Image 1 (cartoon, rainbow, N blue to C red):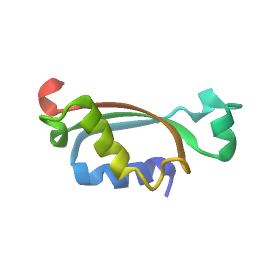
Image 2: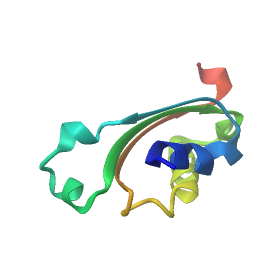
Image 3: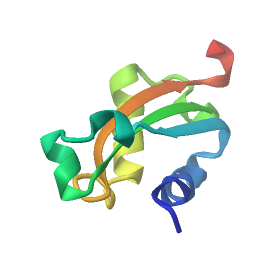
Image 4: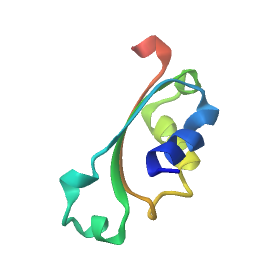
Amino acid sequence: MTDIEQIQTLLASLEPESLEILDDSEKHRGHPGAQSGGGHYSLHFVSAAFEGLNRMARHRLVYEKLHSMMGKKIHALSIKVYSPTEV
């Protein structure tokens, strides 16, 4: 399973209406964090699970789901999350 597939699997419980994951690792080649093998990813995510939550709570929810990958397979994560009523 690729890292992107693993991210998709871990976030599936949030029932995404839309989920785009970009691997930006190549842009960060030579960066100290990239040397440990952790990737740089951008996440654009729409889910009803974010309805009524502020930005901090939404990010916390995503990090909670991806906890097992953070600092290992994921070095950096850019997160853009929305509820369906915001898109």
